[in-house]
Image (cartoon, each protein chain N blue to C red):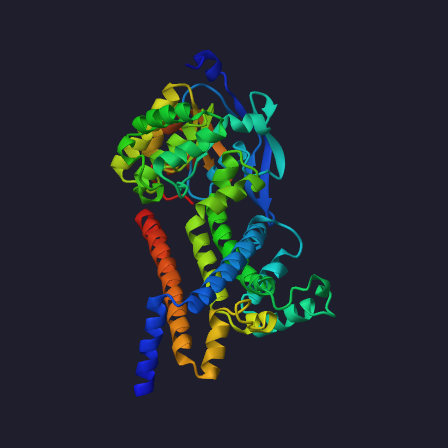
Length: 237
Length: 244
């Protein structure tokens, strides 16, 4: 294990030194995933809220569909987005394949169902409690939605963080549509896969450490927010 | 200050109000007329249709047949805006105590200074000034119910419906809620309150409506209904027999 210890040492040296290649890859990863989560939130939250408070034909089926899409296999999403964006595909003229935009699209497809499904759950539960009171105060169903979203803010933030966790850790889809091009579409997960196969374990380990650090930070934030809202709920029981 | 003469003229009445589900009649109140200035208490065992009637009077539930009129007018948005309701389980918005009041005041279009003054006055009225910045969901049940009443009063209602507001409260908390309700009544807010607590009816009511099986079996001045009821079933209910 001499080798491993040395590689670990080299990895931490890279992290501590703020290696420019490392920072470039981490920066691109964060930019792609944050933007993807933002887009997914703009689609998923209204969709989830509509599924929660709306009463329209096909709602039940859509709820089941959105829940099912939470478990989409990333590789399949990558394949489908690849086919859409490839030169002969319907969106080929946009020439987005192997760009960060393509990776963002793939991550949006993966994350939107998560945010939509969790938003629906949160809003539906809150609505069950609020509906009569809001009606009594003269709010229409539509006017109730912003109230529900605001009052569900802690749980919704948790949904966003869950989506971000999925996006930043994802490798199957972005390697297909992004192509893992150095300085263009190389993100943490795809770089780890490549550097490991090249035997450059120091960089792979360093990226792994940063990725785990981000995952732990996100999860810590989620559980912290969860604990806070549970404490509030308990205090009311 | 409200014009008391006009306030005491407020009348809510039902005409042919009926609700049934799967062939079973849940509510059948052909002509109930709630007038007069004092609090009306709707009394009766569980499942008597008290809460259902209250929701119809407030327009939360559309009856299968019949209408509710307030001062001769059908319940439209304007009439409903003059009403407020407090529920058995207080619904606390996920905001501070002050934020719960601010939510209502903001909807009424008050500016910041007006809202702050009103919030301070309301919290003082409900004995909750020290709680202003606390999360509303961390209040005790009694405090939460008081806040729910204050929030309802913040809409400046002419009619306040209360659906068993003290059913989960101990005597001290019940007393705090009752005095809040009585003070509102004294200021001219028309109170219509559902309870199955006969003692509460004695303490608060000017007139009492007794419901059983979805129907109004007796309605009259509190003293008359509580001390000398016409119906045998009401007499047994008031005597503490278990009627269901």
